Structures are given as structure tokens and as C-alpha cells.
Length: 240
Image (cartoon, rainbow, N blue to C red):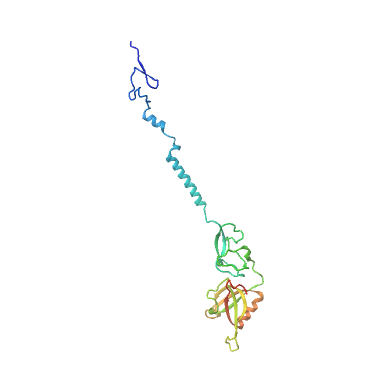
């Protein structure tokens, strides 16, 4: 019986019968690879290491973070009240006098725009100026409201709540004609309201003035003594 013959491959494994490898030669020194299906299964990377999986995960995380920021984000700052127009000291604050604005930073010194405040200004406010808590006071017990009838041509056309005026009177002579020199009867009175009152005459204005108790008689006497003119006091004029 013939003896089996063994030949050694380059990597030291004997092959019976001395048959040479079908796809690789012993002299080449190349290694034999597993079948294609086995290699594909063995070389397949773990799913969490795949670039597409990682990119998708990153996109989901970014979307969640941005969505949370959009939902949680809102107008910055604290809502406080500001003057909607120039307001004179002595004005009783109303809803039409104020507009809400947002203030960045510390807003504790200003009136929060959670409800319309009540009170009287004890200093002037310019249009757009924030309403400080220190500028409001309770209505004084010695204040009086006096209504003055005036012709539209003897008062500013846009006279309104919160304006400050000087009241001038031109005394009438016995004949009923106003020929005397006009005199200022009251300075710096605050306008509480303006309306048209048909009972005062065709198109006449009813101007309600907020005055001190001591000045109420002065206004009444002026109205009864002659023609009335209301002159608006500007911010630069101040109270005289």
C-alpha cells in the first residue's frame, strides 16, 4: 500500500495527497479567506457605529432641543406701564393713559402691567416714560372737580385728559362786551375730562378741571365774570 504523501503550505498546514490549493499556491504565501457569506456577517459593524444611524440620532436630539427652546421661549423682559401720552401731575390715572411695554432687567421700581393702577400722579410724565411706583399717590381729600364751559375756539383743539392748562378770563363790561385786559385766574390746572355738552350752547366744550379745594371758588368766579380761554401749558413751561 503506497504511503500518503503530505506537502506543507506556506503557513504550516499539511494537505493530504500533496494536492495544491485550488485558488492559492503554496509558493505564493497568500492566505485562504472564508466564504463570502461568512466574511460579510463577520465584518458587519455594530448598528450604533453606522454613520447613518449616528447622524439620524444627532438630528433627533437637535430637533428636541430646538423644540423645547421654542416652546419655552417668550417675549423677554417684564411687562410694566408707560405713559401713552404726556400726563400732568395731578392726573387721575385711567386705562387710556397707559400702554404696556417690556423692560429688560430690574423692573421693581415700576408699576407692573398686570392691572390698571389707581391713583394720582404727583409729577409730570412724558409720552413713553415708564410709570414709577413712586409717581403714584392716593387721591387727595382736598381735590375738587370744576366744570368750565368754553367755546371750541378758546381752547386747544386736541385738549384732553391729563393736559395742564392756564385759565384766563377777560372781564365783560356792563354792555356785555369783553374789552378789558385778560387776566390769568388759575395756573397749571389739570384737565380731568373734556366733552361736548349741548346744554352749554351749540358745540361748546365742557372741560372738567381737577383743582385744589381752595381754587374751586376762583374758577367759578372767573367763569361768571367774563369770557374764558384755556391755554395749554407745555412741558417746557412748567407750573407757574
